[in-house]
Every structure is written in structure tokens, then in C-alpha cells.
Length: 82
Image (cartoon, rainbow, N blue to C red; front, side, top):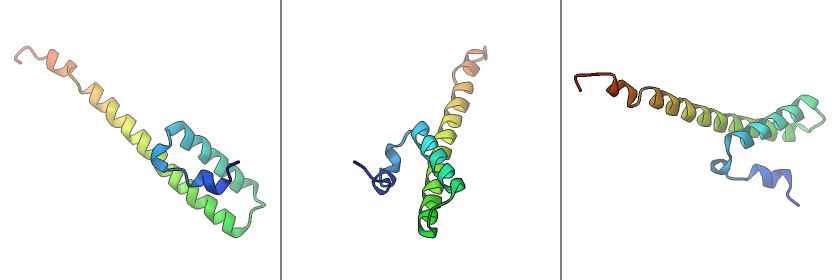
């Protein structure tokens, strides 16, 4: 059986977007529900910040790939002088 501490220790590089997003949703739910100690709340907040950064990196990477695909070879095919 894994504890929440073990789950938090999972390498952030190994998390996919959906995994990070789902864990972030759970962290936010736990913070909103309350009932945790100050120390637990701070640990949850820090984990949430880390997960948000992971999600942002995934989304930035997806945006870069979309931008590259949109600016890809189609523009060269449309130019008859090339």
C-alpha cells in the first residue's frame, strides 16, 4: 500500500498531463474541504504548485507543437518560387 507521501515523491518527469491534472484536482479538493493541519495544508499547497508547473509545461509543449505544425511544410508548398 502506498501512502500520500510516496505518491508525492513520484518523479514529476514521469507524470503525464492527465495524471498531473487529476492529482492537482484532488489536491485542490482536499485544500477546499479543510480538516488538515497547517503542515499538511502547506505540503498540499507545495504539491499543487509543482503539479500546476507540470501541467503548464505539458500545455506549453503542446502549443509549441501545434505552432510548428501550423507553420510547417504547407507554407513552403504554397510558394511557387521555392
